[in-house]
Amino acid sequence: MAHSPTDRPTRIWGVFLIFLRLGLTSFGGPVAHLGYFRHEFVTRRGWLSERSYGDLVALCQFLPGPASSQVGIALGLSRAGYGGALAAWLGFTLPSAVVLILFALGIAQHSTAIPPGALHGLKVVAVAVVAQAVWGMARNLCTDAPRITLMLLAACVALLQSSAWGQVGVISAAAVAGLLLFKPTPPAAHDALPVTISRRAGAMWLSLFVLVLAGLPILAHWLPNPGLALTDAFYRTGALVFGGGHVVLPLLQAEVVPTGWVSNDVFLAGYGAAQAMPGPLFTFAAFLGASMTQAPTGWLGGLLCLLAIFAPSFLLVMGALPFWESLRRSPRTQAALAGVNAAVVGLLLAALYQPVWTSAIFTAQDFGLALIGVVALMVWKLPPWLVVVGSGAAGWLLSLTL
Image (cartoon, rainbow, N blue to C red):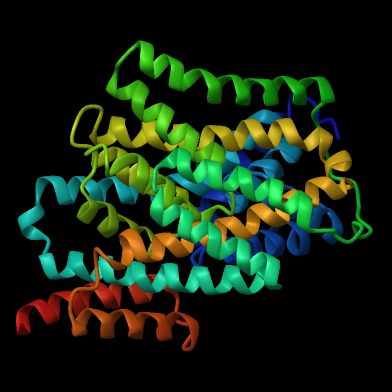
């Protein structure tokens, strides 16, 4: 639906304010975010129908990257064009990104002021959070013997070959296995999405996505530069992580820890802190950029990594929307995606052991604290931010008594 040029800035500002409120209050992870979005834009504002919203969620779960952020980008795009897409992303992302950059700067500049026990508590709570994610994703995505087998094979391969490219190989092999193993059911009835982009423009955005993905590693090799290397690593992660949310953990760890850009302790402490933030978990990239041991670091590094990891989401959403009708009807596409989904659960299962478990659980007290965190999240249904704060406080208290 076209809008007059005069009301476009008003619409863009309105989109920004709505998503800023969501970015400040949307705790609970991607599934919760999608629930907030549904209430705000389907039930309350009527921007699109229930079926259209469900179809939009399906598209963004099909694409690599953070599904909830991509849904937000698409909603802003349908409401106010490209400016609306940017406004939705800024409003939803900046609150948690700014807090995480400040936390990274606090660790770097005032490490003695932050009790080591509290930082260890944040690493321990990461065990609980990832365990919850593995369990929830496995129940939804690994529903039969072939899928469970794919999950276990992916986990074993990831443990043996933990590099970022090794994980990309696992995902690619799983897509081929999905084509051979699975026969998905025909798509259900749906409403057309409010697409405002032509197929020609969509093809241009998809071409740019592939060009940047292929070109950045070559540029980083020819022109050795820390900023270019960071951009390559975080863009590639954002482009290749299927499942969003917690699945970004193993890919980012493989990029920044072995290279020495970020220590494993800082990585896990930041990951734990990210659980307490509203908005998308991908803002963890801002923490990592601000924590780099070499320039660019601080605010510049945080913003660079944040932009790099979200850039593929913009290009993929704008590129895929015009072609979604064709994609969603393809049984081969759905079969490949079933294999990929099973594999990403395996990658997350491997990450639960290495580096999350091996870097956090050293004593019986650590195991007990992690177990309490799992029960608090999965049985008592406490909000993640409260569990994170409680784990940090418990880690500090335990360090005083031991």
